[in-house]
Image (cartoon, rainbow, N blue to C red; front, side, top):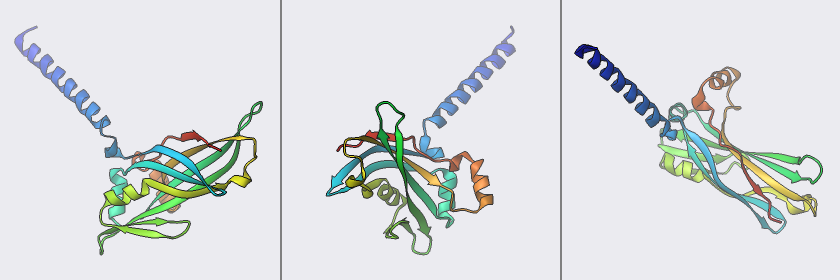
Length: 195
């Protein structure tokens, strides 16, 4: 090999190394593409009611953030599954619950609105960070009555947070289906119901 071939080979190695380094760097920044994560979840029995307390980490993707800032409301959905453990049979899914929260930006007031779709209560926040922090702190969300459960059975619960696109028109939902930045959902978080 002559000197020019060594230079070409050396430059090729540098380009490959930089490409790998940039790829690894991009993967180490999960909030660039957005991600949802359930950090903790527990149930609290208050009188006869089981209430959900949970901590979520919600990072919007660039596309979802651009849509929000353009006036498109986003719906954060919490899915809860209540599963009865059975000894000699497969576990039984007793019920599935769905809770929706709407996040909206209002450019005139420059405020972020977080709305509970079920009871239509809403709060206003000056920053997106504050609004996402509110969404990530789920407190005293009613799940079920203790009296509705079988007395001697054991139960476990599963929780998942996701960015819902059900409220949009069919053509938009098809577009979102092919775009990874709209597929924001956490892994299922599972815990035992303390009775």
